[in-house]
Image (cartoon, rainbow, N blue to C red; front, side, top):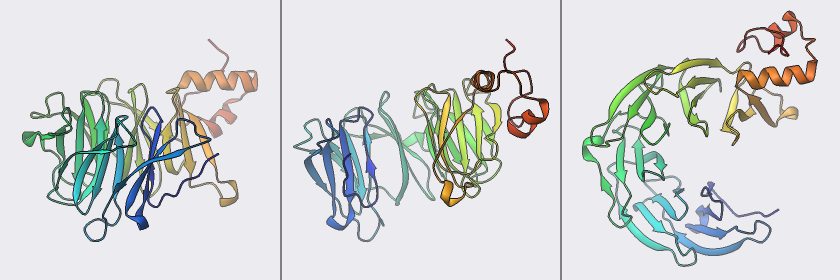
Length: 299
């Protein structure tokens, strides 16, 4: 096991060979080589300045070798192809303080949004000359954004009470495909690895609502996860399991809750664990909110 100084968070690229840890008090981002997790080495540091406009610098990996940094000096992109010699590739100053970012490494499309203005779309195919799609600005008051696939994004809009799905295949001409209602104020969005399921998390209650988004034009309501108040949520790599920290558990039972959301997986598990002895009453008290009753071992 290894530990790092990190004041404000850390970011790891998909291939997990580097780790960028913010060290706010030292006004820098430390870039660690974690190819051998047992013996990490400090590869380099990148300066940040967060004293007035931004309460805490934001950092995130865009792909495996590009580091996004946002601080009082604006946005800077660092090329970490050689992690020991970071190269400042480009920079620009947004009109307003940023709230969040989303990036698709396959299409090299970067999305930026703030509390009041429209969401911006940027082409990062040339790191030294980022290009904004000025006709592609959309949806003021954005709370969160998630790529459903290379062509579509889900955006929390309209006072957090709806999610709009947009086709951004042509970033200069985004098209709204559908709108998904929200049960309460949505705080964040998550997409399954197979890009077929969208999870919306309510900020106050932590309720998690699932939607089938295999067809972005016609989302399918998969229902609420029963008796869950998630503080945080991640889809597991198998695409069938959700890992959550459940706020409704007592403090002495705090931990990670693993829950499957695909009916076939539920029935297979119940068949193996109950040997087809589960009664309708037991079913009603356990999983009826999401799945209809049937003898789990019936094919």
